Image: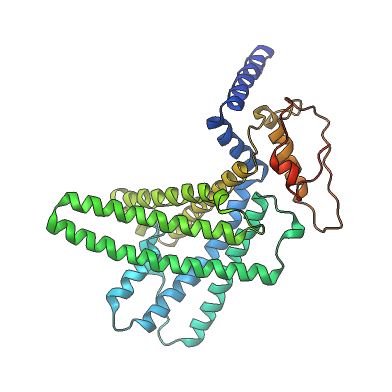
Length: 358
């Protein structure tokens, strides 16, 4: 790139940087993207995807087998429960259902499946603790010990199980909605469908609030968790609706031709989308609660840019996250001058985990 285009690009970037600092509606999303990049959010999402993928098949195996034992005389309810669980994976749900079968009469296989699936689910929740503690820059010394970590993971798994019961009830409500809609007219059917989707969003939001609250080592106030949880709950339901629509209109009869290959790739992609939602929502909560905006946009491209107070606060938090023991002192020094004499925030004055900034 020649000198003139480089100068023009630099001037344009400077104008965009100045604008996003003056307008929070843009500065906040920019700061979320910056922190997502600083935390290597793509790798955090990949970590959740890995353990999520390992736990899906054993957990589905456990679900189908247990339902086969408990609801042997009620195949209709058994099928509804399984379809509700598979409904969380609209792209590959039918293929998953055809690949997982009941372990009839095999108690040892069921025990092994319970152990493997339970361990995979706990490892998934444990990975969630790592991700959220990383996003919130919780010092390593404050992370829970292995026993408390697995207790938190078990609590989350139980919460997700209760959410599955709630979504099953919503599935029954949706079935009744179709019947009532056929009898009373299409308008009522649409209204009830909207109500069912709204209730599903509420359940999703509750699951995200529970996950953010339980898996984070610090006791984050509910007001700081709610915005990201609501956004993630709505986004997850939108993904569900888009996936269901796409399968019904575009992929019917196609996935079966690809067999196991389509199941693996589709499941990985779907879990990764969900993991991205979790990471981005948590990053949004962290940026908003810790006042980590506006960030210097040009700092992502050059080290000569003067840092904002939010930049300094973010980098101080990153440093404090590496404190492994209370006997270790962390102090942050900045050679780059501040851009504006902004007053100190409440966080900088009172947070004991924020290292001194010099």
